[in-house]
Length: 314
Ligand code: ZN
Image 1 (spheres, rainbow, N blue to C red):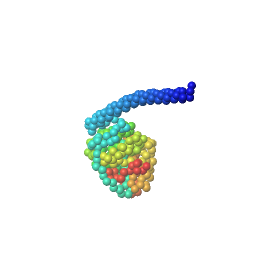
Image 2 (cartoon, rainbow, N blue to C red):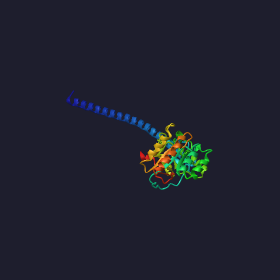
Image 3 (cartoon, rainbow, N blue to C red):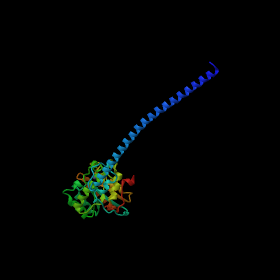
Image 4 (tube, protein in one colour):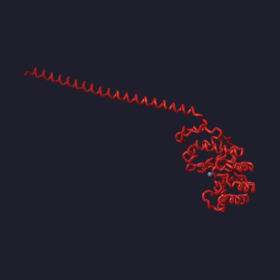
């Protein structure tokens, strides 16, 4: 083989190698494109499916909004609070609304005795003792206690005391289930009080106080809503401790109040008016006797008394 022939063969081999490489590259490209095309088709399918799902979800949401708008505003919603649209309850119970009053500082040494849970078999005796000392007080009443005792509420108002609402059912687990449930109960007791004494109540004592174990999940929304409706709610800064133990003596209850009011410019005192609290009735006489001598005055709460609330003391 001549030098020329050997060169020619090398050139041929090189050409063949280049041709094979180009062919292989083209083949790879074709396969790759094919795979990409397959993948692209699959992704497009997924996107289309997701778009369809989204459109369906939007349609369902619009239908739900439409159904909500079609609901009459005064119909209580059976939906639990957690699932309710924020503020849905605001349109409900339109009659549950009072005119809020501007706060005014009470005179020094003013005591606001408050009685929860009545009226009861002890209310008449309480009213008579309060009259004996020219003292005014506030009764936060329970709706289920009212039937047959309506005249006691008329007496409270007639003798210059304040009547506020406490609860209709006083069942913590029910009333604190949602803001709506609370308002429903409050409307019920408000109607019952108005029917019994002719006055629309504007004061509220939350059962268990404004912040308690049952109300904790909803208390901020609940307090905001009650205040928005013009109601004044009162916790207390002195407790007679007459509900913690049935065996508390007359002296212990009286001492808790007499000592408790010292050091406050004005006091909101928690007491109870229930059938089994006869000791409270007797202790109230001691409280009135002792604190009157010390120069204290006993007044009924109204919307001008600055709020005594746990939230402010916390
Ligand atoms: Zn109570």
